[in-house]
Length: 177
Image (cartoon, one colour):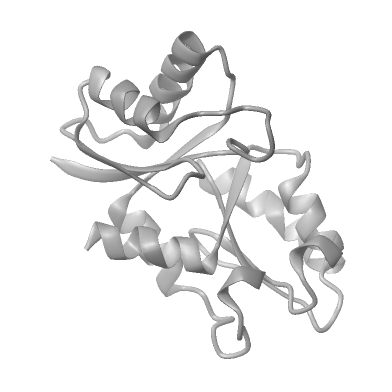
């Protein structure tokens, strides 16, 4: 059984796209996933499955959420190994003093991740941007709302991407261990 992480994009922000975590857990269990748990209220779920294709899991979860809750939301699924590797490649930790201002961006595939390099010029110092092999990282010392790069990242980007702040990512990684 592989452990995987599903990251739903843009749910439970304001009044739109409300997905109760109990419903998400039930949806995942109905799909046959085991060891299902959710973290926080922002669409983070850990589960186990014998099947190994994160892309297929992402499509199945997206379809099930849409069917049950009538909400179409992008879903990114990563293996536990991929998510831990992404966090391990964060080279901004030496300057990032506030985990809530350090964004981690993940996409479903490497080609989509490469598109995030276009954000680098938008990161105006003292901001810093780093594109790793598994994720992109954006340090916004003056705040995420003040950052053009962060606004482009969490706005309507050219590819499906979701972000979590560093504190949330560390909670997910801790739950995986």
